[in-house]
Length: 306
Ligand code: MBD
Ligand code: FE
Image 1 (cartoon, rainbow, N blue to C red):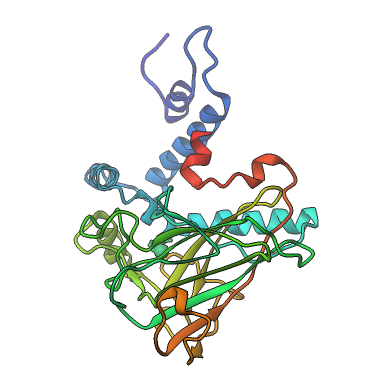
Image 2 (image 1 turned 180 degrees about the horizontal axis):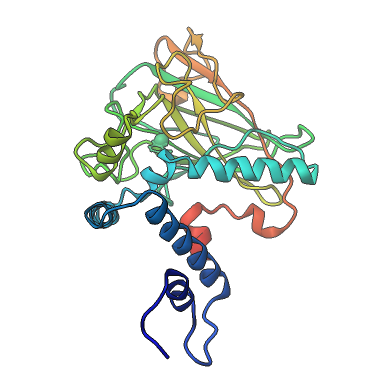
């Protein structure tokens, strides 16, 4: 047998298995497809060796930087998965509920847990005081008691705790269990938008693409309850420059909240509200879970880990 290959013969060997081995069928299918697509790209675009090695160097640095999740969001993959999930729901005739929106790469599990209400921030307000409140509902509009609302947002500089080591652990991250009427509420401050870190593999690519790396102001949620499908979503604050130009394509119609003036602190004393604040009312409507797996309160990496 010759060791001189055409491109086709090379691909067949790359995708071949050892004698008596099958490997993982799904992984082999993905690899075969992706490698052959990239071989074709190199051919079609006449990619030079220098360009190829520059690209692999960038990928190595990207891996080392922990920014892979920024790149998948910025190149539209996260939104693509949501578009596909929405389409699958439509085809299955499933009730829609609150629109899903991407989890993003900045979730951390295990935030402090409270019943009904909590403060996300600590100490002095670091922006306009926000109280967000509402209920968790099922497909029939019935309140869901004991639902878990896991909420997280950026600080006044647009940075997320844990990834920004200057913040205390779990800063601006909390879990809230809804009360018997399905209600939750929390106090925090209106967060600003997010920008990708400068001088990083991600910013390098976005500069080369002539794109910006900004997200409009938003607050993330995972909402989970037994028998209900896990909802991963975000709400957007109105009036942001990037509200219709999100680098991660995560903003959605139906998720831009209304900011109401909350003038009197009456009824909000337990949240330490002493003066005017901004009030956001938002109910989350969950889909009924079709099987147990759909209701696990797991973030994306935990789902992969099983
Ligand atoms: C974020 O804050 C975010 O929510 C996403 C999806 C990507 C990057 C930063
Ligand atoms: Fe975010």
